[in-house]
Length: 77
Figure 1 (tube, rainbow, N blue to C red):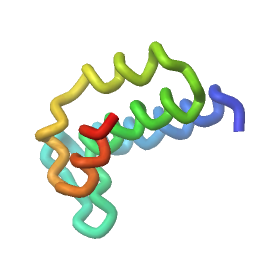
Figure 2 (cartoon, rainbow, N blue to C red):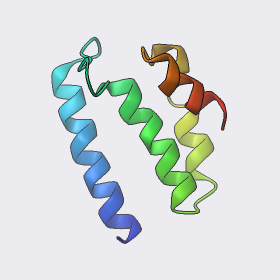
Figure 3 (cartoon, rainbow, N blue to C red):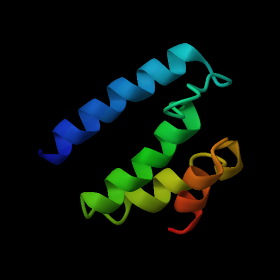
């Protein structure tokens, strides 16, 4: 998938997370706005766009990720 397609899917997920609100968290999947923000970091890394990953990482507080395993993976960047 091209970078544009990956970001298009991310933008759709982010829009849904924003609609749900900042306190929403799906218990089984951990779908939430902070997790979607962490996925932006992953996209930057996986798409080999080094400028995007740190910018995305600085755009939210990792402590907002409720899931300890997900937060840990993000902090290991």
